[in-house]
Length: 175
Image (cartoon, rainbow, N blue to C red; front, side, top):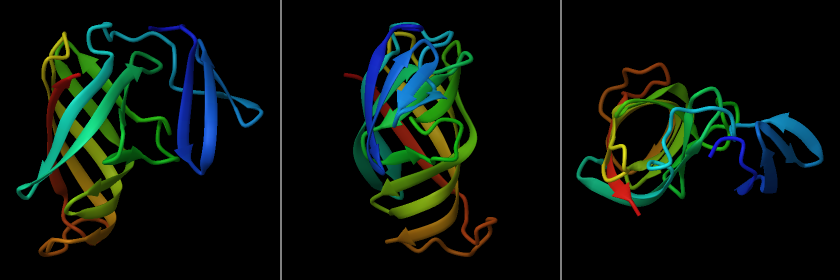
């Protein structure tokens, strides 16, 4: 819920604790703006954890995606393992997304994907749908890698980072 106190533990470089009160976060002794609180059009029905599968090239990785309120009318998509927002992205806590009715959009932002097909850093964007009660989520993720350590042949290089754009399909439902 917006403006409700929450405690968030996140591991990236060591363990960082964020105490969110409204739209302020206290972490490592400094007060910084964060993606918690604020107004959002997200209904309580979509907030929480989702069991999802992320698929590409016939390989599907299971994951847990959590949806929380973001700032400025956005929501945050946070993943247990497979997708991580970059520290220099709009929110280091998760991918910043917009929900308009049932249409879910993740605008272009830096991220890292760790999938059975390989590990890549680059730019991510996505479009899909999210049912108002969380019973169904579907996203098509377009990822333009700038680096890739993979287990599959990516074919001819066409992207800015010398790699083709990768497409992943995410499907799942609320736990």
